[in-house]
Image 1 (tube, helix red, strand yellow):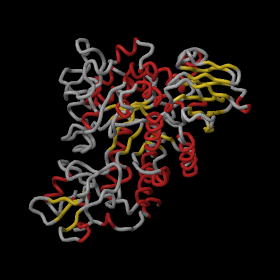
Image 2 (spheres, rainbow, N blue to C red):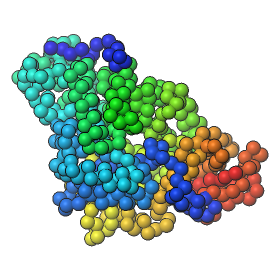
Image 3 (cartoon, rainbow, N blue to C red):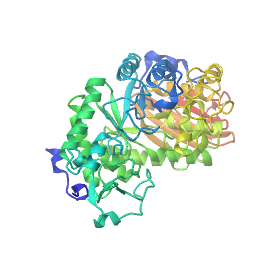
Image 4 (cartoon, rainbow, N blue to C red):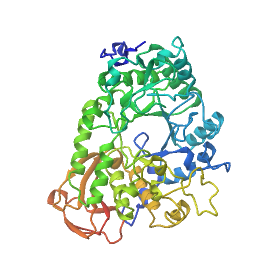
Length: 523
């Protein structure tokens, strides 16, 4: 009973500031220039974020209680990692696509969270995991024990003697190191396909019935619950790598169906691959995560060398714009699958601040990973990059989750949010001032990018221009003070619009940049 998922047939059916920190103009919220999805989005692992009922696990009501914190930080949307019922802590193996995990609360809790978020002009994006289900999903349990099950066609099966099951021993992407893709069912001569591992059997998108089920799921969350968009997990793996065109077409089809119920539907996809592979997905997924940029920023700040960071970013953006002029570049430093940025820069606060400054002044629609703004640490395995958020010192922290014993974010290792909010030099306030700068600047939010070479390896320089606003951005990535001489074509940038070190100053055509500092000049 082999399904045609591994055929090469095209899916033709698819197309039937002048003072330290933010200046007064930046702080004025009524002048806000950004508008989501071009604004800041904050990624939350619900289980670790905020506990409302004392059971040690983060929950929806806990998140609701922290919406003012997010509003204060300046974010305009949240991306919630999976919340569906699941047997695992991470919940990327779903057992009910229409439900909320009981540890997290109820559907009514979630609807109220969305209601309260919308009152604060914060959009809600939920993780949608449709590449695979859990092997404990009722669909799979029934399909595995009964070859005539109505759900048999929801999954990919082949006989144990089929030659294609011998194509093992290779990985096909940065998002999985699994090499065993065909898995046994006890007491059966048939194997099922699971790209990531046996507990996550792939869904069969060659099945019209399965496709319609997926549309039904999407419609439910948009119309019955009220979410604003989906983050699509493993978007590259709906079909195998040898069928990329089918993958591209599927997302066009899915988006068109979702637009029927939400004309402003927001879909952001995870395609962990080089730009030339990512590009074609933009026709169906206008927002895609920019993995290349996160790696490039980390490399630049660690080496204290700007290199080709800005030029390469512009090159990738130019390529994507040719595919889809309206695309949304979902930039980020690190996410829930990667070592945290603070650990990636070996705990160096100056370098973490510089990475943030680059992210928030370069083009893109930035995503922040929860706890990034307070310098949370974390290295693989995954549990250790998803540790409990630190709201306050232990004796006062009624929201801290305790579902796991943290390895990196222990008492004293990281200053909690409450302390950092009171410290003007904290990482939190560094994030807040840069977010405010960006949110209130059309040039930084929407502007074109012009890379500059000013002859100093440790200085990243570029111009951002939108309509009548043009900003010259200078970042000193090095440990040494640097004086930059501006060429004649940049002489018009005479006003210090923003700086994050009081020692930074402009003297005629020269700009003094203290170590690890940023200056934004305006015409």
